[in-house]
Length: 321
Image 1: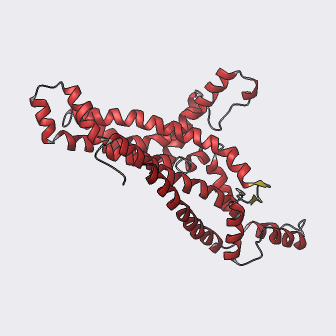
Image 2: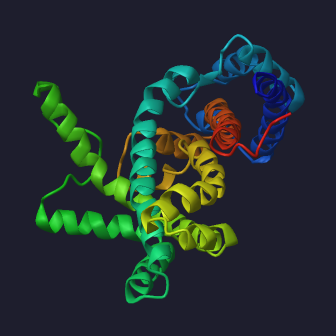
Image 3: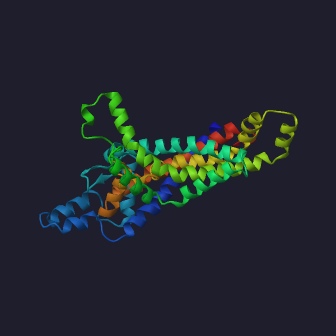
């Protein structure tokens, strides 16, 4: 396993370089950049713009610009954000924790709700309860997340029982630790529910389908014929074999922690990487776009590796040679 992990890490390096190269060229294919906006400002001279372009290598061909960015990346220098007037690493670290809190809360909430619902629906297959859960899951998959976010924000404004946006209240700094925690938790409710609805619906249906397939196997019939309790048959024998596809899905969900909440962050005014990415793309702040992309790519590869490791631990039949 250790050799397998080292090999996967070594393979990840050229993968990230290849993905960053393609992304860098795609970004530069778009017309305009941040300095084009600066050129429209009469207070900024052409000499100043030329100085900044030469300083960051933006006056060179695109491939040379990429090599310049890659050389700085080896020194953990992600570049400079011209829009925010700060290093990209500082901006990402400042917003990364906020996005991680939101995405992790939605991930935990989704799995805690979806897995029991999937098991319950599979055990009661064909009953009215199973049909009711499946119907609600179908609605959850169908409803657009941005529409649900707007709907919940409107209901919160009418009832005035939840914050309408942001991450903290205006008097956050004057609160003690427990009140600060509760204040952030209240701001988390709407975006967490919005992000989780679609995930709960999809994960519930996958859990139900996998468990139904396992419950039809001959060894499950044999276990029931031996007189084992139904709870032991479902949770000890069936669920252990139905969990393998879910582990793979968990790896992909983990890799989407940084990117899955981008739209909801913008709608709910959550100060995370989503709004930063939106601003960076609109303003042509290429280094900030590349820095955010690099974090998402690294998390994608780490999530897949984590899923493979967990899969090998929960299923003794799987071995990574």
